[in-house]
Length: 255
Length: 340
Image 1: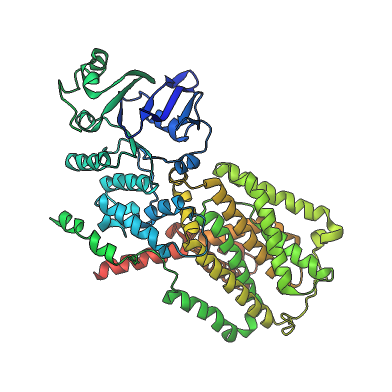
Image 2 (image 1 turned 90 degrees about the horizontal axis):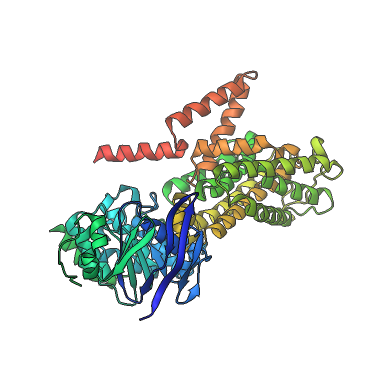
């Protein structure tokens, strides 16, 4: 088992407050790895540290064994780390298709091309349409992003991340705001991604977590409380204490 | 079961890989655009007595378009854009006053000098927040103004640079006092540069600038080098401002130090906002309305014209928050909605 991405003693401190404290986690190749924990446990900060959006106060981040702690966010994307954001951060005035095409163009190194119209990038547009279709967004491709329903905006977040062809996909509450039936579909589509793609997701819905995660890390107050297979986590008395019995008893992972 | 119908669509689309156009701009000129440029050409014949003002409107419009790249597209607020206009004006003016009388090569030199100045300034500008950007651009503008003022032996200081003499354009057309050649020259150059800008804003680069303006975090998260893109946009905007400055110097055969002034930076910003930022034609329309109003009001009320001009600006921007073009687009959209 080899870790694609791992952290060593990662900490983020704002003044006296530790959002993350001494977090060492390894994500194995092809994992479907959930990050759970109560609100304010530092899950999003941890993703921000992994993607370079926020600089750590201490500790290191390794991708394929290389130290990427100080690598700029867009360079990490080039190395295969993609993410979604908890609150939708999209391009309100661009169309759905344009947005995904931009991500494809950046991946292909054509994002700085300044003379031919984006519309004439036919390879990028067919690829973008294929991604949108896979997420049932095909019918919305010509809609302006700001007119999309919230649930569809969440899907567009995922489409943008997929368009970078990540090896490491970090999803910050991908199913939040999506109707329950669709959220199963969305996470199902993500879980079915080829095993070359390692998936890490933050999720509050424990049904979804235990349905799709094969490994779970529990963060509490910025530190790792427990890590293990879903049944180990479900049986862990410390985790049960934090969650006050929220975790379904004896449920086996399905995936 | 609309959902399942949609799901069956992809194979059909894969068979015809041509992208659906829809809202994607594919570079074809729309009827309104053709009408606009036909109008600028018709104005040459319709208003022969106004060629001097007309050429200044076109050139100032191009200057506002250059700010649109920086502000409207890339979202970099600037209160010192005249710095690059002034660099272009002085380069073209100094060349012509010191023995280099050929106008087109001087235009190129001015663009290059302004681009270099913009590129250097961009490192200071793009890193900050809106407020620091405002302050830094303002400061750069003030410094350049003072430098031109101090170097009065070269620039003529506050008296301005005179002795700007130009050879005929392409050896054929000599600049005349009525402004006939000036208008035609300005129109050709402005149209050519605008066509280039128009291509650029619909390219992946141009769309990525809009992306950065709307969410730079997300742009970085899809792998875009945000700061490099912004520096490129700032440099491009500076180069085009330099061309506009050079055109003013050449068509008026004079460079006043006000080419570098804060007032000019502020005025071009007002014109762009008036016309509509981020809409490509906003700068041209804003310059046209602003300068025609300025000229007309000064004729009607020579004492209080600035009051009426201010009044016009406030009213337009209050009613059309996205400028004249934004307001027109909203009205058109509403009219279409009602017809349905």
